[in-house]
Image 1 (spheres, rainbow, N blue to C red):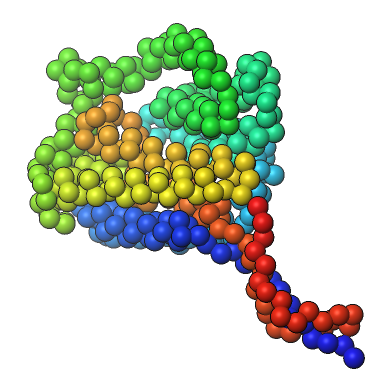
Image 2: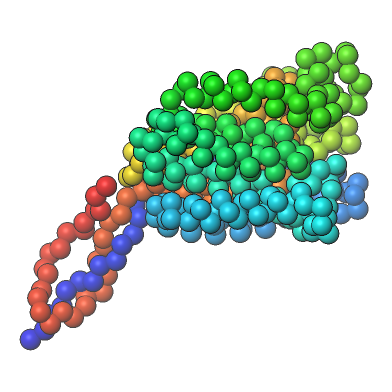
Length: 399
């Protein structure tokens, strides 16, 4: 007579760090929506839209991003190793579409640069960050000890990521081009590449980088403006000056939520590139410090997850994702308070922009999966004509 045995299915069990990261992300999203509405309501009405225009668009991004988060949290992170090459090739194609002369119909110039596709709805340079992380981590694990050799290890990786950086520089977006190389370097360094190779290549690239800075006049002006605001025309430093006025007006505790004045047309892009200035004005020094600590907590949790990763690839993947999220946030805040030259980096989970929002939620889902373990749980009884399996205990998958 056939006996019934409990069928088993596999589910992911989140660690304490993964659960804490989930709660932290929800906190940042909630604070981001409140801040975005305050920073964008007046701008939306001045443009002829409802005050909730940007808020509703951001909510649609959160809805899609939540689906991506859930899929990434359930999908074994080792899958990203399998699709690393398609990811990188796709990033190269999308970035090329932004700069080719015959693609202006789908990649028009916006604010003097071609960084978006399809009218501004897709920003390939954001998705390329994930491609750089997954592809570099995959190749680092694959090459192993060969990374100790310059010709067989670092140079082939630099050739591919360097091509992506060149495409970014042609948009032009020199800051993201440098960021790709920096992100690649962090993952390779964590994988065991000799630091002397980085020093050699860094020194060798200085003439090329400086020539690009001189060619891109706006970059040179921003650098000079950051070094000495009095030597450059006021237009160059206008955003920075208005952001500093906003932060200075906030004082210790801020002027109050919704009471900021800089979003009345004084501070350009107060809901995007300079939303950190809005936080400083309405929430004050305490608000800036609070947000800084939240991203510090994200970094601590992310690196804890990387330390406990199941495989070497997932270890490097978690390092790359955590580094990207935290440094992007700190670069944005550094620009808003005048510690860094002006760049176009957004504040993850807070700034308006659905490309970065989708990427941030997707990468957080990857971190949650890396910080989880598999276990088998019993379902409805199933009929097995050969054997019975009474009292099976849940089995946790090993590393």
